[in-house]
Image 1 (cartoon, rainbow, N blue to C red):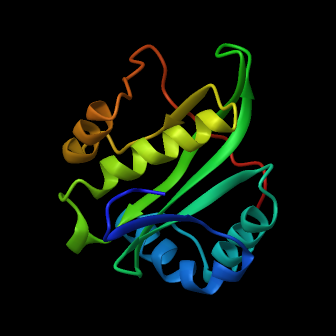
Image 2: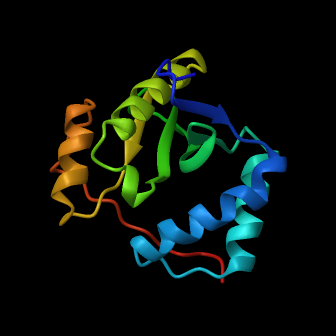
Length: 155
């Protein structure tokens, strides 16, 4: 848990699906991610039911849900073990710039170390200087030699 009195970080479970959906929708709108409510509901439900796939933490301020961070797991030969990918990280616009995201990244990183996750990755919009700067302050480094590329296999 984040130790500030007004901000808490709580591991989500299946019972938080309906509470989480509006924030995921807001994140997808912010990032111009095309997805239907049906797709979001299905994807979240699977992840919330099976922590082998990854985990989602809810970010609350004075018990009001203001954000979430979703980390999905895989395995890396290069890094020598299980790694995580920050698939989605969203803080409500009114709460950005207050250090909440930095605290969340620090706490989630510590929780992942306890789970024997050896590396944490993310992708960030190349034009989002504010986010890139925040991630660099949190210890992430740009791997200029590599670019994330995707091939969609399912309809």
